[in-house]
Length: 459
Figure (cartoon, helix red, strand yellow):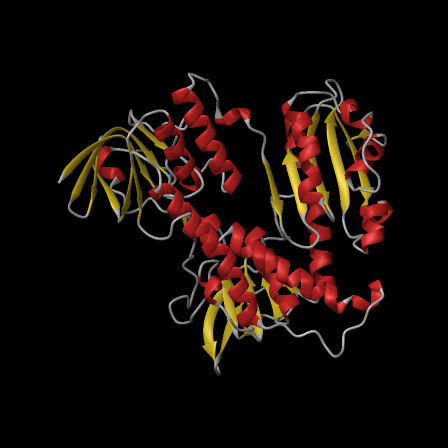
């Protein structure tokens, strides 16, 4: 059976559903296709479920520190992983069902459950159905990468997706990968009660960050009792007496780590391998990401790629911004571009890291004259009152234009406070706008003017 639509959307991640809603509101007919769970990574295996788990782990940690706050619990704090998982499932499923119900409730929107493949530049096949449209939007997301480690096929391992099914406490979780996903899982499971070891091939954790940020995050995790092995040049996996041996060949520490479970957190792979892209000549890079221009169009006219599959951002907020760019350009005659947005993201450990703009290394590479200020969270009254004084705030500005170039806020509320600086950056306003603003006391944000008063030339 053949059907014609004004637009076909493949995937229901963070870009697809709002795009369908905008198109329908504009009087267009839409087909949206989902082959697995509605809502994509964020709703099912990413942001929502993992941050729910982070919240449970944080609550357990605060309970253990009760005496610091003036209360005591009878006996040790124990974590019921089945209840933790049930809470996570309830919150995640509510979002998942909400996405599907809203899509099915849209007038002139046909929801199709199945696997889409391109037949031509204007035709998509799902099972026996042939769908045609002048505009097609790919929003298929990504999945955890599984590298060809020695012994990878001989052992069972977990990824961020299969971790969602865990309703027990691993005795010893070995996390392979010292970046954002791995660190969040490492800390939460340590706080749930597991022994945790992080194995990272690089010389430091979260290698894209400034060295002082990496060092501070490592110290925070080690304070929680997490063991960290860096410079793991050759990682290998093997069964050993009912456990999993992780060979690491590190410069320091034992050459092998014995764990009960292994979590692979070594990056993401786009879900583009089985869409038939080669049938119509859609260009991809060496890793499988769809190549798009500044307005998210592929090299094939009438086809756009949004979200994690285009390699232009790996976050829910970048995917949603992709939708906004495409919708405004098509429906409002706007000229929005991917290059107009400022890089920003967070690491949701405790305390969290909020980041925006350029890193120190990027600023030095640019050759521009810059100023920097750094301030410890231990001197922030709000952090001191909460008993959460780890971390620091760091802000870099252009010495000539006085515009903010980048910032890292590692500390309580850092994932929220960073937006104060981000909004000023989008306004292209000088840092003095923040420096001279009056903020509410006692908050973390009120210290931004204090930090900015201490700017010095970048060394």
